Image (cartoon, rainbow, N blue to C red; front, side, top):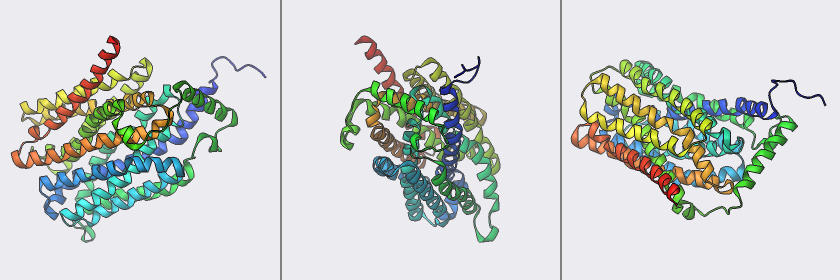
Length: 430
């Protein structure tokens, strides 16, 4: 066999490039539309709340019900994925997301709003944790922060591109006898139906079943992943309650709760915060996109930095601290430009942690416990997210102040960052 020419791509490089191009873009597109279906209620609220009679408390409670079902179904769904295979399970969950999103068109009051948000949460509980676990089955550890950051780029990107789109669709008010917010839910849910059908054909259950992966590349990947599993040592799969009580999982959950609560709360409430300065729907949608656009850049850049340095813990803690401090500053301003700067910095912080955090979680969890651990982290984190979103609505209703309503996010961010920083000091002292 002739030696490879100087400068030729290595087997590792071409393998990672191939699986990245075949798997990651499709999952990004799926999560892009899934997250639009989660957050577009924030733009819809500019019309829908008055049309169907939703108070701030009712809107916040309905938004928080998403995380009740997300919590209840997270672990069972992730274990089901392991049993039935990623291709079938993720395809079914994407289709379930589309149906739940379409049901938002039928909202007529608080009760129907509560039911549709609950159903949407149950569907996404089967998709997101499963997708993260699926990526860990394809990529060695050194690539995970950047790959997961690329996948989760769909979160801020969905609001960066989706906010102007949703605001424009609100302008279809009255067409065909539907409200603008009904058109928005209908047209943004239809692509998810197609993606669910495509998923059955483009997502192999494992690298061994990927017909498009050359034998030498498949062999290298299988060997690399097997070696990493061996290095981690044997571990028994924990029961649900044992995973939920594991100290490291609790700490990871607290950190992720801070990020999840901030990103989801701001996705839901930020349009109303911006419109409270007297702006119209289109101007609100355009300004709402700005912090999320900056979040996309921060997510990719910080994920690459974390992979380059190999540092995960502080790469998660410092952005959390940045988010918490910035949101606390809303108490001191009534200026739209200053508020936009604060919201942008908060988004940079809450999205920058995504890649380093999941890489840290993958490092801390043994391969045999990863599926249960990832789902447990989501379960505990979204209990806190449920509470934060509900509290924001309740505080806004009772005080009329959005800065005061954001204080629960400040507290969570400080607690999550503090826990990770304190863990580092204890490790060095031991």
